[in-house]
Length: 310
Image (tube, rainbow, N blue to C red; front, side):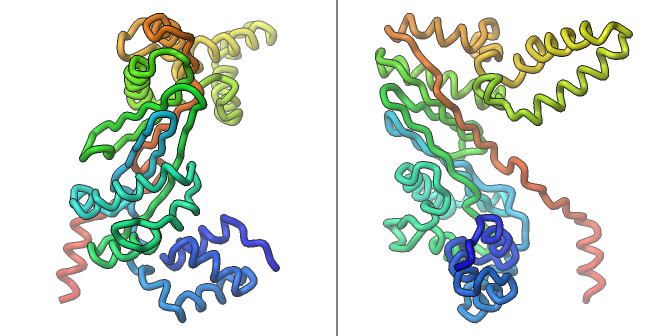
């Protein structure tokens, strides 16, 4: 049997608007033949949302939930902010976010999970909502964090309703200290992450391509000084540490709550109040529509086209 890659499933989903599980089955049934899989979906009536699926869904909501030592975040997109304010849509986001706690960041499992109020899978429930509301909607991504002993704190920025908004953040803190105080500090740290948008927890976790790009820029600037190569190298590494890492590495950023100490120092200070050492294990930050190329509509051209078609 031909192996069905995630990228192939994604491509079929984008072409047809059918659900992820349906696309995987279509490719499996047709030995990974894309055209045959498209025909299979059409025959089954599963590409009914295709006309809506070609419209960009970059609005919507980020849902966040945390329950003591675990937390989950989900981004669910719609085409317009108007629909994101719709009570039906918000109810759907809330219910799907609750299911996300159990699947530990696995999108495929989330789409296959049951929505109790609908009696259907998340994937089928979203399809029904597309038909009901009349806009393309997608469950774009999900993530989860957990700790053995500590707290997963959550924060929502630009809140639209309980547990959902434009930015959702989870922060995982491990400590044997006072859990209420730990949760309070965790929320402050999650607010910082929402505002400062760090790329990684430590320099070691940064994408090496990102570091290489910054190093190349600093190197070109340093070479212009005319200094020897060994001096240029030291200048570049110094700027990476003092400028770039302090901007994008969470523990090295200036804590926005007080505007003075680094996050690393703020964690150490908080440990005194919490009554035990505190370790920041991980964070997740979902900003609505990140990386989605939004379609810019030419309203004047649209009106002219409509007038000309009459």
